[in-house]
Length: 213
Image 1: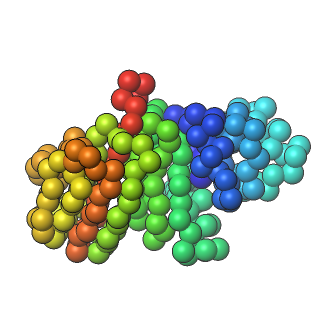
Image 2: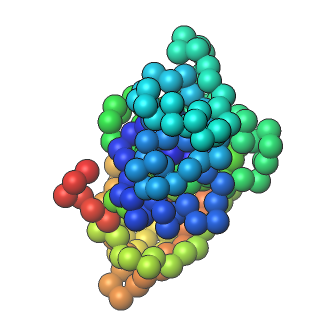
Image 3: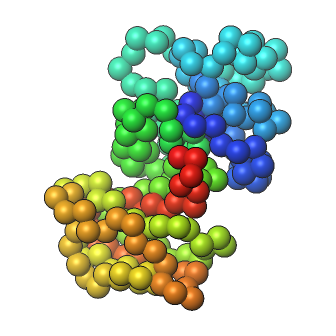
């Protein structure tokens, strides 16, 4: 999914798009066009993408679901609901979720977290993997991040274990009332990490390029 926040770098978007179904959420259409990509679906109210982009989408027969601007749900909510109805096991890479207005980024994050789908917000600069309920994730980083943070998205996250990092955790509880899990880093000589927790909602955040955030 490409949304209307900070436009991702073209080469990154083309690589992320390989072998994936592409959906544009309103102004996210412009990110796909800028990278030379054509989405399979356009959804939104048309209040942020340029008229020229919408006209091009219609001229090349991209399927469009257009909604009134005055509505209860955001364009992102509507896209996620439609995707879940078609494929409940879909993994969502949502780009264009960072940058721009904070209220948009905040609601986009929680829309994906509460959609019942797995996924992340990502571009070439930063990535936020959203985890809900009992979770376990282990991965290797092809490029070492400048920082990695655990962000409690529920009031408390229980039985958190985090290894492969400079400040590890072992069966700990973390909460929104304490900022003790921000700006960690991978352990010296490590390019891998493992994270588990038993209950709660958590964001696993990486940043590679702070200079242009």
